[in-house]
Structure formats: structure tokens, C-alpha cells
Length: 142
Image (tube, rainbow, N blue to C red; front, top):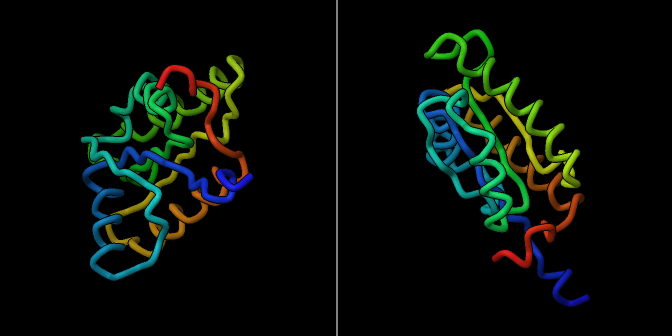
């Protein structure tokens, strides 16, 4: 019971270098408050996030994954975020099939000028993962 009270979700965020990473940077420089539960990995484009990255993050013990990129239609690589959106949908269905709550994966579209939105997204994702609970499916592999 005491351990349950101390549990904090661990979230990994794959952020597009052009928009979402810059939005995260703006949130920091603007001193926007958001949970420190997220570990950020900068990727060239949200479309470059392989579903295996998501599965590996869950296997390593992260409780949730956030994939964030440019708004649809504003991708610096034209269609990268459309690929990301499709991959996330398919990955969620696969995770559900193997018994992992698909709510552990979230996607958002945050531009470089939306530091406040980034802070809100991280807060919402952390809140959602807290409701889902700790990732114990791969606990024996850590």
C-alpha cells in the first residue's frame, strides 16, 4: 500500500525536433509548470518513431509513451505526422491484442509556439497514465 502511494508514472516522450521539441523548450523558458515524469527523446520527425521504440520503452519499464509532432499539414517532411498517426493507431491495436492497455500510448500535435499547450499535454498524459496504473507486464524482464 505504501509503495502504491509513492508510485509516480514514468513517461517517455518522442518529440519532433522542429515543432514539439521546440514547444517543450518554450515551455521551459517560459517557466510553464508540468510534471517532471517525462523523459524526452528528440527525433527528426514524429514519422520516424518506429513502433518497436514504443514497445522497447514499455519493456524497459516506462509506464507510458507520448509521441508528439507538428500539426497535420505542417510537417517539415510533408507527410511524416500522417505516418506517425497511422503507426500509433496500429500499435495501439497491437498492444491491446497482446494485453497492454492502449491508453499507455498517446499522441499530440504541438507547434514550436505552443509551450503552454505542451505543458498541458504532459499534464494530461501523466494524469491518464496515473489512472491506468503502473506497467507491470514486463516487470520480470527488468
